Amino acid sequence: MINLPSRPVLTWQQIAAAAKEFADKHDLSSRQFPLDVEEIAEFDLGVEIRVTDGMLEACGMPAQIGPGNDKPIISVDSDQWKQQTSFYRFSVAHEIGHYVLHKKWLKEVWQLFDSIETWKQVIASLPGSDYGWIEGQAEEFASYLLAPEDVFEPLLTNQLCKLVGLEETVQSEDILPYLANPVGNYFGISNSAAQARIRKSPQWKTFVDSINSDR
Image (cartoon, rainbow, N blue to C red):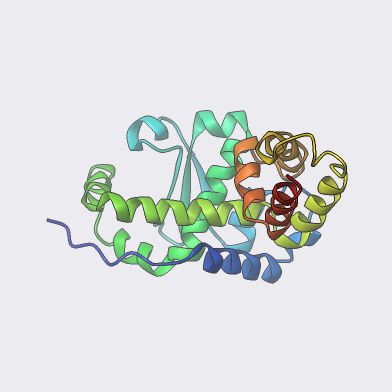
């Protein structure tokens, strides 16, 4: 039986605040979008990115962060790396999220394995709810990392202004996928990731409330 350290407990508000602190520290809002996640990992954090054949098949995930001799290593599946899609970028951002949010926890976990097989045993030892929380936190961080608040909110304001006058004819859930297209394209994230990011914005909640109040 592997004794695992207690998982970090963070609210999504705390995760958003951590992502904003990180974005401010590294001045991400002034960079070109979509953000270069490899640059953030390697130059801002000092984390190596290593392309690995068969990563997805061996570990059941397209990317993971682990210990290296001198610095942590984000290993990414070679097929996903070659495609360079929004999913690849989100995978790297997800692992960055683990490192920023869970560094202490990770270092304790890394001491428990010395091979892929023992890593699988470590993961298998995690209660399902704990594993879901850990992964969910990294996913949440990734969405805020790729679309920093200082850039995201003005862009969303601009897009919502284009919808003035449509509130009486459409439902908010019908609008959301179309609204997510320009947002996702700008930040280099999938439509579903853009929708999830938009849902967390106070602007979107105000917009939805205005639609509901008019009916």
